[in-house]
Structures are given as structure tokens and as C-alpha cells.
Length: 341
Image 1 (cartoon, helix red, strand yellow):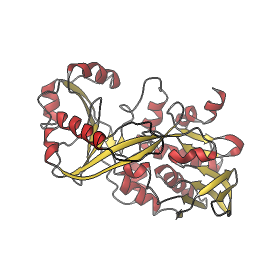
Image 2 (image 1 turned 30 degrees about the vertical axis):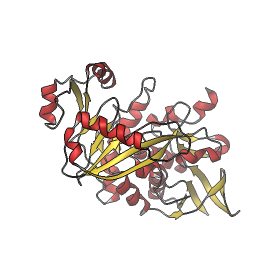
Image 3 (image 1 turned 120 degrees about the vertical axis):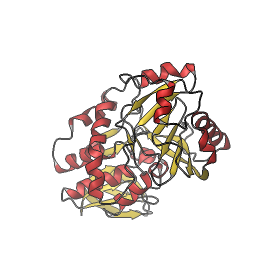
């Protein structure tokens, strides 16, 4: 019998299983498709605790900042290059209407003039009205990250779980697997376990060539994430369309148009891939990490920040499995908040 069975082989399930295994627990990850094949493989890999915070979600910032602090040791422990790059995030206003929005999102940082922005990134369009630079924010390659994590734990692919309990899972063929604890990490598909999680579609474009920027760039409408291996990711839409993963011409057009307004050299890059993924959104768009009903452990609902929050979520779940206190930053995201609200 396993000490813990993790249902879902995205970055959250894989990272949590790895951390639990490091504490000496015997673990298994069950994945309905391939490890990392869902939102984790489509994600841009932005590690931006300050710029990803939304109004009314104040507890998110310390939770996300702590996760970013854990990242260097987290990736070092994997022993392979997963593209971790502390390149910083430059948020720019393309027109006068965006100035106030950017200032509000990055409050506390010094406003940069257009010429100061271009001193950081010479390829910026002449129309840029200014911006703010967050130096500590970073990026990672999610595909390399999930591949590295999957190599560290026992992952069983193509296994569909139809029912879960505190200490067992039932598979589509009727087989039951017993475990000391069950952890649901099924992302947008977590609703099968009775969790209030919905899919939120996001479309992204991948390009390749000589990097037109050395820092992540963001506007009110899109982001650009350069990687040191020559890949550039442009994303992402936010669409409430159920389990639809269709890539649409309109979304691709809008992303590339907005990217070109900021960084005209992006037009010279090779178009490599367009894809759509399903982020797991909770009722308040905050993650659900901890005890759910009837003793079930859950780690889902990370919305747009599953990659960013993987280290702190993994630490939280591993601590709970071992009978230890979870990190204090995780307490506001206990799933029971939705029951008592």
C-alpha cells in the first residue's frame, strides 16, 4: 500500500509527490493522460508574485513570494537545467489609458520614463508611454520542469480515476488502490471529486529566433516571455468556455497584434506552435491547498499560477502528509474557507 496517492500528474501533483517522497513516503501519481500534458505544458512559466496579484487577494502576495524564494533550491534539487531565469518583468503602458492601470498593479515601484524603458529594452516601440520594472521576478520552462519532476517519482499514465476517498481511489475499470492518504491534484478536472473548480481557457503562441528582449514584458492585454534557449512565448487569453481547447485564429491574431505594438521585432520570429490549455479556477480564483471534506487532501484551483506556486504547494502538502505544520503563508488558502464563507 502507498503512503500517498496523487490524482493528477501536472506540475502541482508531481512537485507535491516529489517533496513527499523526499520525506521518506512511498508515493504514486495517477495521470489520466501523460504527465504534464494539461495546463502545465501550455503555461508560459512566469514567476511573478507581485504582478500576478489581483485586487482583493492580499494573502496571495506573501504566498507567492515565498514560493519564488523556494525556487532556486527547488530547481537545484532536480539536478537538471529547467530554464530558471531571474530576468525581471517590465510592465509597460502602450497608450495613455494604460498608464494608471500599470501604476496600480505595480504600486511601490518607481515609474520609468519611455527613454528609461528603452534603456532596459532597446527594441520597445516608440509609442511606449512608460513603465515599471520588477527586478526579482523570474521565469522557467514548464515543459522541462514537469519532465524533470516526472522522472523523480512513480507516475502511472493513462489511468483514469473515477472516485476518491480519504484512503483509496477507484479506477475506471473498477480497480481500487489503497493508500494512507489521497491527494487530488487534478487541475481543471478536479470537479470529479466534488471540488468547486472550473476550467478557464488560455491560448498562447510560441515563437523562436534571436531574442528581441532580455526581460519579460507585460501590458494590460498580454505578456511576452523570452527564454535563453531562443523561445519566446506570447500569451494568454482568459476565456470561460468550459472544456474547450480549440485554438482560434482570432485569439492568435490579437496576441500577436498586441505583442507587435510593444516589440515590433517579434514579427521576424519563426512561428513554432499555438496551443490552448485549461487553468483550474476556484470560486474566488485562489488555490485550494489542504484538507477538504472527509479527510481528503487537495491541491488544485491555482488558476494562472500553478507553475509559480508549485514549490510552496508541494511543501504544504508534504508537511500535511507527514503530520507537520504547513507553512503559515498557506493557511489563507485552506479549502475549508469555501465551506465556512
